[in-house]
Length: 370
Image 1 (cartoon, one colour):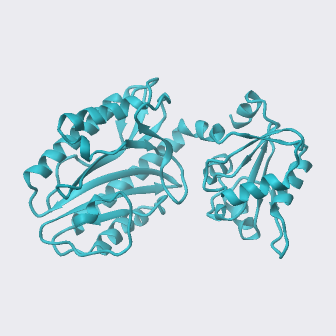
Image 2 (cartoon, rainbow, N blue to C red):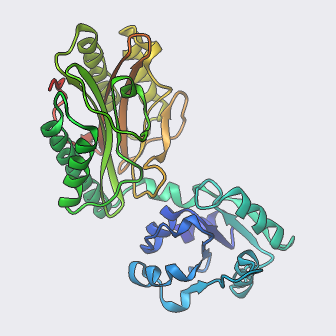
């Protein structure tokens, strides 16, 4: 499909820098994208990897690439890996043609892009094509769906571990250890970013921050995490109440669950992603919680690499991208009320099927008081 897309777009080849693209097309599995590397795919179906020596065996053992398809650039003072990549492009007969390039990725820094352009030749035109592989990746194969199901089961196992560990006086580090341990014991691997944990005022954060604390006798704990199976993920989110929930927390929870169910109903084949955001906003605004909601309510799930497990695009207002059968999404209903000092976040991953949404999580939506 990637080759067909190249032909359709009248591209002679493409320079791929996203680790997700490398993994999807060949199985190449590494964090070596933090350095300069590139995968070149030609419209004739050739695939070549240009990388560093530490990733030679990584490519040999994790990818379908043969040794003659793996090219190593020499790391010595004065070496220019960018010129080396252009030399490979020339060897493949692509110089002077139209080359797609993935720029919307952490696998290509601004510095490396500038160096690449400066080392190239004016006769070769680089065409933005960051969506060429990502659009293909959105619709999951039966095998990919199975990986997502296993990832979702691991996410549920991690929640079970958190519920067993969370209590007044519990240490956040122990809760994280129990959650991550459940994923590892289940045969999973690291997620695309750190498991997010926050209690007290930090329960109102949507990001991980260093420095775990001990839970008070009356507290709130926000968790966002994902199981991962062969890099495929299925994120979840919960705010647990330590002690007894007050009326505001109960109302926020009811609104979050209602919004989550409304979003599930809005996920339909052939409909724009913006509809899902609108469903989420309508519920929260009707509950008088418009001030506490976010400007997005979820995003795609897939096989992704650090630094985040977000697989774009997101559910935001006006997003015109049409949803398709085989898409996997993470829905997060986030309420962060700074004035009240309260958080209530609820979410899980879903699969879009011919019959509508399939919830991948087995965990109930009941308010949790520990």
